[in-house]
Length: 184
Image 1 (tube, rainbow, N blue to C red):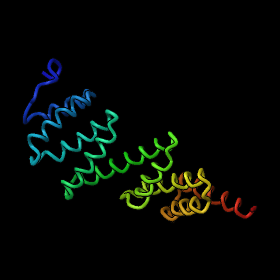
Image 2 (image 1 turned 120 degrees about the vertical axis):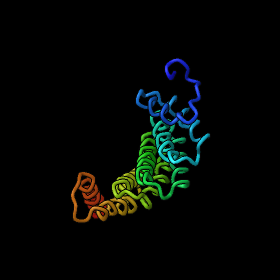
Image 3 (image 1 turned 90 degrees about the horizontal axis):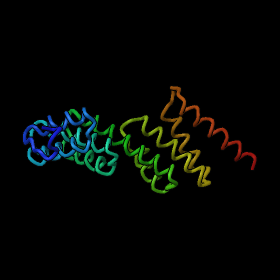
């Protein structure tokens, strides 16, 4: 039935139909099924799982705005869900990727706003670390050396006692910026 008629409403089985379509990489069809399920059974025991799958379908379709809105609705509706950590991780990483795209497209102010929120409030240390590093790069691009140093130092502070590629890059940037300051 899924192959022959995309318009079929499977009622209580829309969640299952959506998962089958996800497996077939028919994300638009999956999203339709998940949306129907949530419209008919918003308070069902499986609604949180379906909402997570809907966000994933939106992401796969490149519908970033819809995915972000869906994940935020999930957080509001299911604050105690066993899936909360997964949804938060997906949301924060999606927002980070969106900020990276904004940087690539030259929309630095837009990227900066998103990254500042992530740097301050992301639940994952890795996201805060990457957000601060990119903020340091934006500050350098806009000629704000002091802000760049502040952001790079935050990357170092987030990694005390650890090692990593981003940490080493942050230390290099700090060293170069401080040398440039001394030369002036």
